[in-house]
Image (cartoon, rainbow, N blue to C red; front, side, top):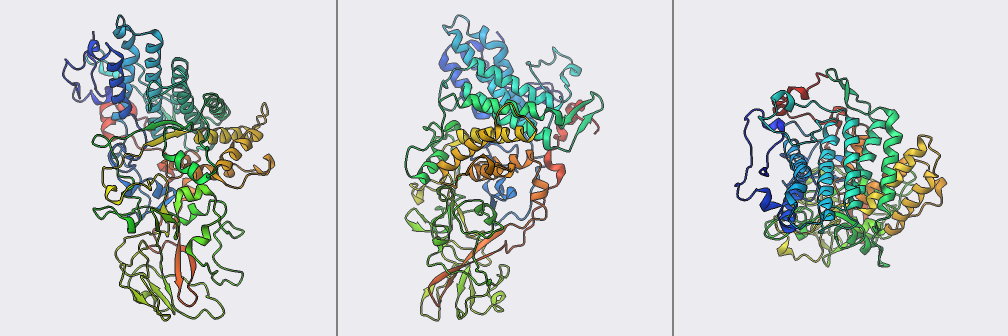
Amino acid sequence: MKKLVYVFTVFFILSSCKKLDVLPQSILQDKDVFSSASGVSAYYAALYNLIPLEDSKYNANEGDGFHEFQFIQAIHNMTGEGINKNVNGMIQRGAQREYWEKGYRVIRQCNYILENIEAATAGAGMTQAQVNSWLGEAYFLRAYTYFALVKRYGGVPLIKTVQDFPAQSIDELQVPRSSEQEAYDFIAEDCDKAFNLLGATSEQRGRANKYIAAGLKSRAMLFAGSIAKYNVVNNVDPATSKRVQGIPASEAVRYFKASYEASKVVATGGYALHRPSADKKQNCLDAYIRIDTKESMFAREYVLGNNTHSYDVFGMSLQMQSPNGTTSYIQPTLEYVELFDGIPKNPDGSIKTTDANNKYIYFDKRFDLFKDAEPRFQATILPPGAIFKNQEIDIRRGLYTGSIVGGIDKFQTPPYGSQSNYAAIPGVIAGTNGGPLVTMPSGTKMVASGLSGMFTGSGAGSTGGFQIRKKLIESLAQNEVKIDFITTPWIDMRYAEILLNRAEAAYELFSLGQTDVDYVQDAFLAINDIRERAGAVLLADKIALNDINIIRKERKKELGFENKIFWDMKRWRVFDTEVNNRIWKVLCPFYVDANGKYIFDRREDERGSRFTFNPTWYYESIPPGQIVKNPKLVPNI
């Protein structure tokens, strides 16, 4: 039998002509690995850990992006979901920050399984159904990995068999890029093969089944349809005449229909939105982190002492900071907050903080501005005054000690800096490094910034006036909020996403003139299903679903801070228009001494940090080192 070896695919063999990551022969003989179901399961456990799952440890801007937790530079900072005190502009992944060689390593291992597992397990007492399931998983994992590559680079080399050097010549091993369309078609084929081979339930939690494979197809084909409809970059390899970046617009209907049909298939697999309780907020909280629900489809688990992450450490407010002194690095922007229902808004959709005379509106408590927000908002965001871990989230930008006769005129908060910046605004006292207590004219003593506000000069606390709630564990003791100590699972695929895929694909089909199904009615039902669980305002009827942006907005609310909005904005090709010289907005609460109430100042981020997305960034650059090893990767476009 052949040895089962962990090596890079051809692109990483050519320069050295030797195998890499080869474990001892005694460990990696087929007869040892595939002689029992437990051996195969152990092998698959390692393989699943290598796939490009964008989880709690996904870092878009370091190394290959995976397994290297770095919450400071999370991709939320670039989409308008979040704002970060340490990030002052768009960060583009350079060629030195790439996911390529590890992806092809996973693909090689999947190819090896597909070619050898049937022969390797013969006579070992395995049933054909069991072997078929393992084959199905290999097709699923290969499709999952190719999708991660294609959504980054466009067309990539499609390696469908195990490559063997020196049995094959270098010329044979140097495979050119496929067209982007060929790559998506290959992903669809692998998903279909996985669906046909896999059972209805997963062999173990965290592994694929037929409906998870259909869910992957739903996701990938929606991406392909979007590229066909919205992409304007069409690069052709002159050597092969293949469109390596871009898909003909004529293919959009085919891909959207594939996504729509796959989403419908998932609906037959027993998955459903999680809503066992009358408490809609709790239903949402559970849906985001619990893997024992009908909504959770595909997730990664963590185990203390083996595989952990630090999500809570970098998401916790300053007043609840971790024992090592680390606090929140990212907070929701006001633009993201304004997406949600139940918050008082102006006709243009902006949060309502001033009256018709441009005077600040008073609130008895900071939380009163958000008390009627949809429950999904409360499960996603902690606004000032919210209760978390039996504490009130204490965020202020400052204090107002001036006169309130005739109301308070809207003022423009100066940039962060010394207290002298506020001298021109009578009665305004800015937060200054957390203390000391300020004694106001009424005699009330208060820390101007609150316990979690942005302190002048120090950079600690909430930059935007909010904190993230999503995926934080309220029951986690403060002394447990430590680096590499968190074990909350990451749900990569929820049924809510599949419903959103279905709604979007259906509406896109309608927009492209398809009439074989009442696609708008189907999209309407899917969106209202999600809104009902979220406690959001329901659409009155399908006529109200008159814009694709209604569905896109729903995706942003439902999937925020799950590492998905970044890719949505890329496939919709809206990044360069929505994030163009953009300064994200913040909301600053001020305590009013004269009446003991609060006002809110809506303004741009005081740091003046501008974000711009270059349209050339819709595709990432192929790593230069790989081009040296395989010149056929470069079409001279």
